[in-house]
Amino acid sequence: MTNAPVPAGHIRLKRAYEPAEPGDGVRILVDRLWPRGVSKARAALDEWMKDIAPSTGLRQWFGHDPARWAEFQRRYRAELRGQTDALDLIRALARDGMVTLVYSAHDEQHNDAVVLRNLLYDEA
Image (cartoon, rainbow, N blue to C red; front, side, top):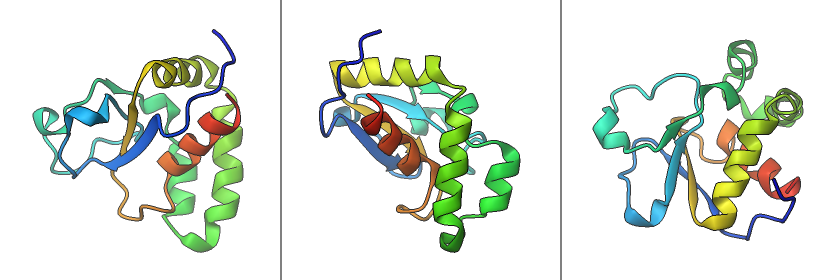
């Protein structure tokens, strides 16, 4: 795959509890666990990439504690080094159009989708 950068604004983040919209483009769930109380129809996903989500151990250690955010980012980026095929696929999709990374965390600033989006832009 090409190493061309992902165009700015082509990767969006959206909570699984928000309604899908036509402008979302390709919707990819990036959580290891299915969002509680969300039906498959309502989620309107194109892909569920469980393996790109943080490991169970890392997710449990982080516990969405903002005080652990910097270390969580470092550890999660290290885990993502082994996911080159999935990262390349998301980048390719984002080069062609909009990609929405769907997540279930309540905290919109401190979650795995934020780290993933930043990495996709940083390492294109």
